[in-house]
Length: 608
Image 1: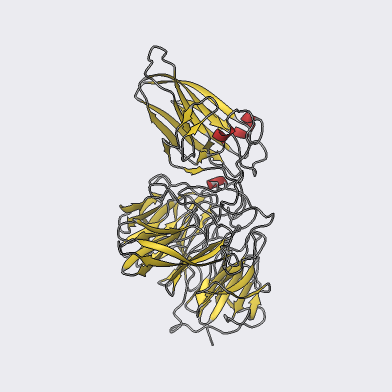
Image 2: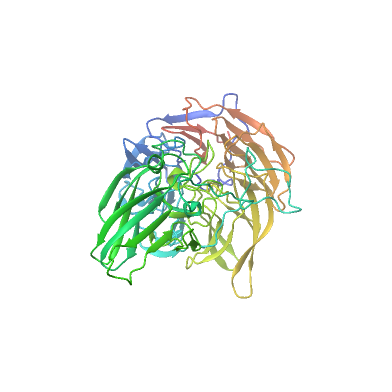
């Protein structure tokens, strides 16, 4: 969904500066590709893309001449998605490198394929191999190829970014998440441009502005049920052999879940299985505590709990392990407050340790009643995260953006928008070099690819956040700092991407409620213009023109100018599906490609 905005070689390709009424000439069309928002990559006379087809996640190659399918390869079963928006199939664009194709599917499978016949050279899983947790709309990243490395974002605490050998898939390095990464998107500081613009509808406070913890009934210690660990696959705790009572503490605290059946998962405790577990149903409603007590016996020195997702991510508030061997006075209870960063003392003066022992997943402190996630897609709704819940607080986590490579003061870096911050890591070692939190919204729905130009790194997101630019400074000790140049709430780019041309940044400002085409000064953040005639959508720049694919469907040709919105032409694609039009437009070799789920249209836009 958030691949790099393609550019074109304007010395080689010249494109029509206007279109006839009804749009440019349709060169060919092909149907039956399968579902998905993946825009095609064009190279060597072929088009490459991703789809869900007949229950499988498919990589395909088409002839550039007529759209005929040359080959298709499955990289595994199609990934189901609970929320309806963009559930049809993958959203990432393949990356072509010589005779190899690199893809990341919704499932988190990353694969290298032979461009000639589609045979898989190697394949890994961001979830299974690196402990990553899929965000709510699953993985949507386009992989970055840089030299001998392929860079991608599992989003795990110990592998937020990874570099793999592009020839073999072997790990070169992993980036550990920074524990202090806290998404904030706060109110504008004094003297910032566009001070008066507020957050999303309903006036919800941003970031750390007076967060309110959820109130939980049925317990004397409601604070224990605010933070949580979610998306985990397991929990392990070393213990002396013996008998124990394990108390698992649950509460559904996300306000977007309103009925039973909206979060269901299974778990096993030392081999004892609990199927179809529904915290809302068990507790009898929202924000009510429920404790599942399980007697177990440890025989191999370790307590093991596994979790399996069904509907929504598994989520837990606390785990209590009570020894039942009365004769052994040295055994002490173990109490863990899931998701918490600090110890907690309850009403009985019992101390609960911070989050520990979990395998995979992420933590959530539960601010704004968003613990456990909810709904709020890259396109319609607003609240939390099923497949990757969101809310404030420290967390690793993949979002939907794609990595870019930059060179700054002799340092090659990879820049990415995670679920909580814009970050830069060393291309050589994967070490975290700097981070900047403001462009990340409190939902963790960060979709647009960052921009590096004219000495500034810029990133933006919607949901009440905005866009911010930082200048990277290298200190005398060799460490980097990201110094904010400006932050503006007038560039809340949702997922259509932004482009900088002649010192001006163009993109849509707005989220679920729609958007307005906006132009800001890239160096200062000052609004140059905004015009509602420019719809919200995905942008492409080629040969002096902006190509805008509105998410409602129309394709618009715009002359970029700092003076105001200047529309040159627009047309409606034929046979529009009912899905939002989120695949980016693509231009290559005088052709404009528009994908609408299983339909791909090829238009001749070369200058005559």
